[in-house]
Length: 107
Length: 120
Image (cartoon, rainbow over all chains, first blue to last red):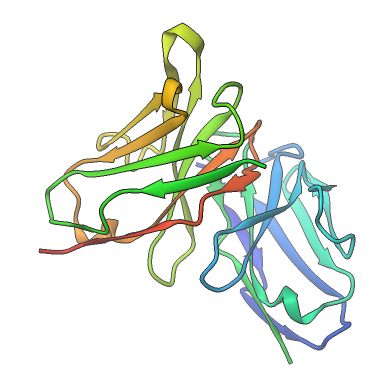
């Protein structure tokens, strides 16, 4: 199975801050990576697919980059509604796997 | 707009079989990978498996190796539903179970999730 590691596991930032989360795959996965946002008590929501493509309707402050084994997810200006846990997921191999998540809080 | 809704029992006894159904509205069942994911209390997301509609041949499936021996996935194309059966459940199977649609790999539509507790 492909293992995904996320860093950091949690972070606290101020409104308007730039937030960056990394996801590293245990082997190359091309650009077959998505990012999801999960607010407390809610189902995950797709934000980014194919490593860098913004899902329709998702604010442009969210972005993704990377390929191979190293990926980055960025919130350019943190908003209060962005408080959530963020997960990466690979779909280059079966079984699909998720990263352990990064919890983002407001300072 | 596509909407997914999980249904099934909220409580299952140990060693019994958990059966969940996902009903799809606002879209057809064809050309997608219909996926189950679960999330144990306070934990991350675990991929269970998917089933892909294959026309007259029913569905082709792929399941997590850690669960494959206990998991059955089915499609009911006329009723726009797909289902999950998990046999011989233990308390470790207590989780929120989500169904989701996958066009190619990413999961673009999710159900709200159903909480399942395994307890006697």
